[in-house]
Length: 297
Ligand SMILES: Nc1ncnc2c1ncn2[C@@H]1O[C@H](COP(=O)(O)OP(=O)(O)OP(=O)(O)O)[C@@H](O)[C@H]1O
Image (cartoon, rainbow, N blue to C red):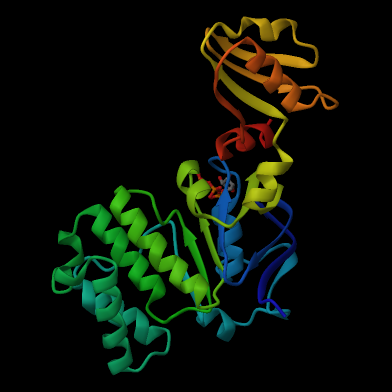
């Protein structure tokens, strides 16, 4: 059986205002799941409910088919939105301390901390006080803190904000390793390009309800209109008169167009070739940003 973290019909209100409504989705072991939504959409509230920091008004969260207990949640790793490290501790002391809190023995906590700090690019900063680290390096320390006990499930709130592109790649590699070792990984992010590049599954939330969820490529396919880009040597204006072609954008030699369902894209390609060389002809896949805009309308 695949190990799944499952949310089922989760509701939550604050002071009579409902901020989560019937939230249900799966986070599957071995996969990176991106959790995206605008400001105030309900991502942090959902993550806090998964972690048991907040209780849902209705619905439940299960892991491997079982209700979550406090003990099971100790084996989770959480990187909260409000970064909670002790500024006066050294990086190493802090990560070791959190490893101990999660049940590691002293030697295992130290060994795991040293491995992780090295892996995440903080090997040289282990003896520095956290308050002396740059924000990006504090962020890396926070990620090490969430991972030190080799969590069964990883929940990360905006783990990439403030990281430079190299650090993003390092963190992604570490998260992939955790996923490959069998953990479900759920992370929220505003950086749609990052989510698009690295997640396997996507959950899109808006106004406290789930608007789309599933494998990234399936969502892309579901939102793909039969849209094409064509670049020819001459002027592409003749496409205006081509039956079944709906021009989206025309700029001299380059055109982007949608095709009516019954029209064969190859017939348009043949028509283009009959007029001269064709430099580009390919289907256009919507970016996550476009899907996001569409489901938020
Ligand atoms: N403790 C609280 N008391 C009252 N309202 C709250 C509380 N926590 C969250 N909210 C409200 O719930 C809604 C969802 O907030 P949440 O922090 O979950 O959104 P988010 O998707 O994480 O947003 P962002 O991307 O801006 O961090 C917001 O309208 C927020 O004001």
